[in-house]
Image (cartoon, rainbow, N blue to C red):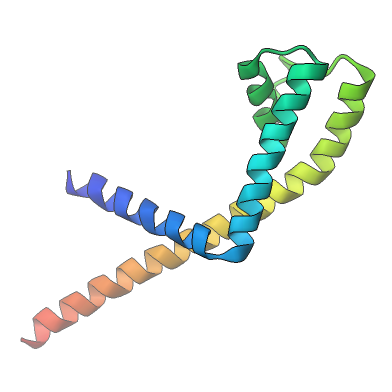
Amino acid sequence: MLGIALVFRSFGRLVGRLVADPTSRGLGILAIGLITGGALFYRNFEDLSWIDSFYFTIVTLTTVGYGDIAPETYPGKVFTMLYLLIGVGVLVSFVTITARLMVEVREERVEARRERRSRRHDR
């Protein structure tokens, strides 16, 4: 139970850092906008359901590309090419910043633990 509480606390700290950092906040908003915009496009131009639109968007931006859904219209194909060029860079940048902040939160937690042990040992 304590382990789960630590995970949630660390996650909360990470989210706080992401929101406080202007670069990560901007990239996060841009990533959410790209995912939403892509889903809207595929919903309207490729006639996919909402769930398929979001699924295809995520699979495309993460470059997994299962191949079970593919654009069939010319506008869909052109959009997907441009979408990949822009979206992959934004998503990779956001994931990189998130990973860096995760490492910082972890290092702070380890340092705080060391300080607590040191204070107990000094008593």
